[in-house]
Image (tube, rainbow, N blue to C red):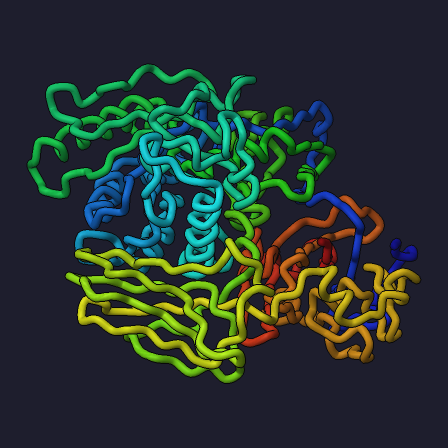
Length: 627
C-alpha cells in the first residue's frame, strides 16, 4: 500500500481504522499473511560518504567472544545468597576492549523441581524465583519430582506426566503464561530427553530447546558444527575450595559457553566454599570481565542458547540511514547485536528503545531490544488452577473436569488417602493410596492428565479428600474449557459444508464486518456477528502513538504482533515492538509500555510506541496476526 505524492492529512486506510487528527498519520493495519518473517528496522540520518557499509550479526550478545553462567541445582534457599554474590562481579555492555560500557552483573539460573518450590524454608519459593527473574536470572525446569535416573529409569508415560506438569506449573507461576525452554537433567539422566539415545522427542513435545548436564556430550563451543545444546556439558563445582578455586577453568576460545553447576554455594561469610567462589568470580572479572578484557557475557543458559539459535538464522542488510534485520517466524526470542562497519564519524546512530549502541571509529555495535517471545508455549491440554487453599471438600458449579490435585505435605501422613469426585454417574475414585509416609515439603501430585484425554475425564460437581494434619495445602487443576485451537474454533462456528466451501478460512469474512476469520479468532469476537467495535484503535497520547486491542488467552494458536513503520510503501520497514503468542501475556519488544487489563475471556492490551511523533518521519502502527 503506497502513499500518493504530497500526502498530508490523516486518512482512513482501511474500513475500520482509527485515525487521530494530528500532523502524523496514525494507522492500524490488520494483516494476515499465511507465513511471514519478523522484521526489525532502525533508522538514522545518514551523512555524506555513507556508502562502504557492511552489517553482520554477532554470534554473542554485545559482541562478546564467550559466555559464562552458573546453574544452582534443586532450588536451595542459599540460591538467593549465591545470586547476591554473583551480582557483585561485572562485565559491561560494550564490546571487548571498548571503554565506557554500562556494567552488568554476573547471573545464572535456578534449576528447580516443581514439587519442592516453597515446600519449606530450606527452599526458594515462587516469589523468590520471580525476584531472581527480575534481576536477570533465569529459572530452569529441573523436572517435577526429580525422581528418575539411569538406575531408576521411567516409562514414557511417567516422563510425559513429569514434563507436562512441571511445564504447566512453570507457565502458571513463573512464565507469565509461557513454559520453560531449558531443562536441567534431573540426576543427569538423558532419558528425560527421549526414549532412546539421540532421540529428543520428549524435548520437542514439551518445548525444551536446550538441556544441560554434567555428562553432556556436546562441545561447549556454540560455533562448533557438532554443538548440540540439548545435551550440553556443564562442570560440576560442588565442594569448590580455596585450595583450587579455578578448578576445571580453562582459557576460553571464541564461541565458548562455560556452564558451571553447584547444588549449594555456601551463604556463610568467610566459609571455605564461599571464599573459593569469591576468588573464582574475582578472577573471571579481572581477567575477562569489566576489570579485564571485558570479553565475557554472563546470562542464563536459556538466553544464551536462544541467542545462538536466533543469530544463526537472522539476516541483516544495511543501506543509507537504515539497518534491517529479518528473523523467520518461530525463531526463539532474543536481543541480537549487529556489527556495522563503514559508518562515517559524522553519522550519529542513536540507541534504539530497549537496546544499546557502542562505537569505535567507523564500527558500530548496535544491540536490538528483545525480539519475540521468551520460553515456550504451555503444554496441551491447557489447565487452570481452580482452587488453592486448605485441604477441604469442594463443590463445583458448573461442573469441571479435574486433571490433577497437589497436596502439600509437612510431616507424617500414615493414614490412607482418597480423593473422590461426585459425578452424574455417582462417585468416581480419582486417587487412593495406603499412606503418604513422612515428608516435609513435597507437593504430592495425583494426576489424570496426560495419561487420559480430557474427554475421558468425568464432569465433577464436587471433590472429597480425606484430611490429615500433615497436609497443609491443596491445589486443584481443571481443564480450561474455554481454550479453543484454530480447528476447534472453526468447527464451533462453522458447519462442515461451510468449512469445505472456505467460509472458515483465515482470510474469509462471512459477517462482512471487515474482520477476517483469523482476526476474529485472535481478538475474541464472533465471526458470524458483525462486530466493527472489536477493531483495534490507535490514538495519540502524551506525544506517542498508542494501539489498543483485545485478545483472548483462550485461543493459543494466534500470534499477535504489534509493528511500527515510517513508510507504508515498503513492507520490510515494519518493525516488531510487542507480541503475544500461545495465549500468553503481551511482551514488549521495544515499546515504551505494554499493559494488559482483565482476567476473563477478553484482555484489553495497550501498547505505546517508544518513539515520539513530535519530530522525524511519520509513524504507523499495525497489528499483524498469524498462526
